[in-house]
Image (tube, rainbow, N blue to C red; front, side, top):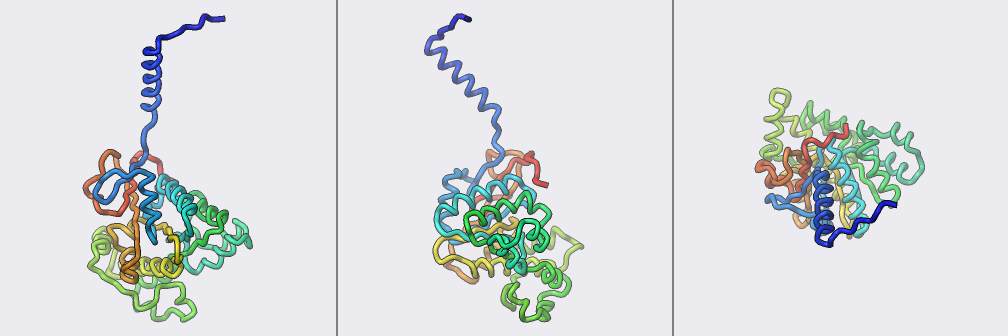
Length: 290
């Protein structure tokens, strides 16, 4: 048997601290949370803020794995804090019946995948949210406008919606669609797309924003909250969906989350100040989900 070596308490403390320091040096943060002014926000504080809202608009970068993980964590936490309704840009309104059939267990995953027009990254990024809703018996609302109507507006403006059959209008926001082309987000979108865009391009975007806001309001619980998942551009700087929600219900407490990537997590980049109430800043080196 090897002799047992006894160390003085002071030396034991130093060795322990060195071990802790070495271990912590191997753990690198991959995200940070900030408020609109750039102050750091704890996970606990974020959840308190979200729990006080009527509507949470969780803006994501569609291929950001950290955002998808945090969406699921937030959904789990809020589900334990009262009534919760989930909704998403990623499922279109005319697939609601199919989604409901899956949530009730009337069709299996293969049928759901076949019958609904799901995004390519649904299995990795959105299926966990749907499965949470199924397991917890939470409503999940397909909030986006059917893409055929967005394409029609992109080609022919809002006038293209005049020909939509009456029985199909339940899948879009009530006509006429309110629209403010001077909102900075829409102006920026046109500038970014350059020659590839027309004024109708942002009208199609507005149709999506208006329709998502419409279905959020339609399914908003009397008590509790609505947690909606959308691309950040649809709610950044309190525009898009947020603008339509507050236009219809100025009293509504809406909290927005935006997702960005950065080479550093110590400080919120100046260009992202005010982008949302809570800003999820993800290390740019984190691999995307696709």
